[in-house]
Length: 163
Length: 163
Image 1 (tube, rainbow over the protein chains, first blue to last red):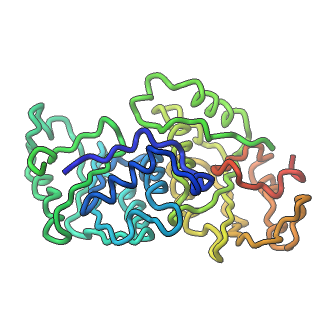
Image 2: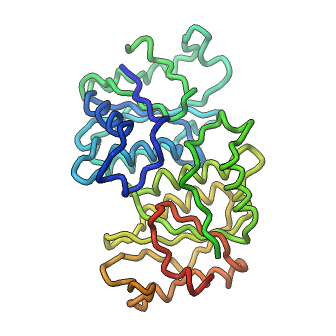
Image 3: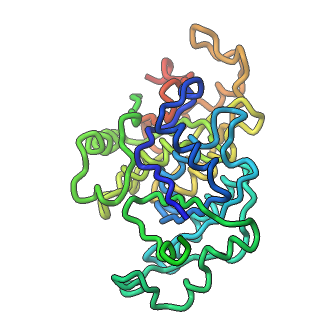
């Protein structure tokens, strides 16, 4: 499993379609190189972060070169609130649906991030999130290798066990 | 009516909350200076452009300084397809709802952009979009003065008559 960075992408608009900048080409190449993409997202204003939507916009273009077409994906997320990114994930799922990405529909993971949920050593102290580890993706779509995490400081609790 | 630019905003994340960059402060100041905000949006992947969501994320933060709280807004959009940004606008409306912006719920404007709809002189050749000109906002929420247009090259057909 490898992280696909998005923080250096400029703001996409369609004027770029004729000549993608290098960082955007590399982003699309990284998606092309993996069997599936796991999105690990926070929720900003009851949707996904603008930075994540911007990355998806880059990946989906130019016309005819949509990186997500038939590329399997899964969505999980965590936030301090009890709904644990439930609404943001639904926005993301509808966007990925339009992008023609076959999605892992179950299990779902709307994780409330509470102090102590993850130890400094990366150990998950609650059984619930362990039960939804992304290796489950493999049962449906082969080995999920690409991870897109919009917040640079966002944790990925399962990265050690699924590397 | 003035355009509020967003193209120079970096990708927001919450690490910025303690120290906003100057461009983001100016963006929030521009929203604070207007009576209402008109969003004119295309649709990217059945949602709003990442660049627009990114701008909203900046405006909504840091905690307690949400620029859209009780700031009236309206949403219109156009695209080449017949649904004319209908789905993207619904994403935007749900986000603005969470941001506590009172929205102009009617009239709606899902405009299919077809060749010849706007002449080189800025004249609208179809009566339908003229009927939903943003000056209607004024009837509900005072004078709408701020316009957020995510695509740098995006036209604003009514800007001359509502300046």
